[in-house]
Length: 112
Image (cartoon, rainbow, N blue to C red; front, side):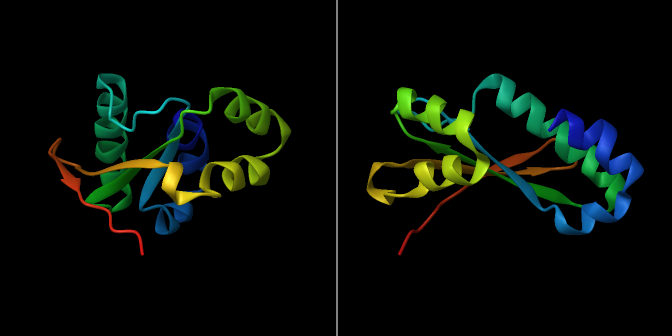
């Protein structure tokens, strides 16, 4: 996220048209927004205001399988994402909307 905010977007502002949020993975069995997650995402939302975004959607995906998590992350991005998403029954989610004014709101997720 830091690279996106401080390096990529300033040089390529049109990328912001395709960025409505961010997803990240937790290698634990808990999907929750830590204090650091919240601080970072509030900052991200406030910076995205410069690119005419009123809010960003943040999604945390968690699986408690730390060994396979690290191995797949080392192998490749596509294998890592596939591993994290291969069985929805074993995954926990948490989602929030972060507004540019520093507000945030939890969002319910329905998987069908």
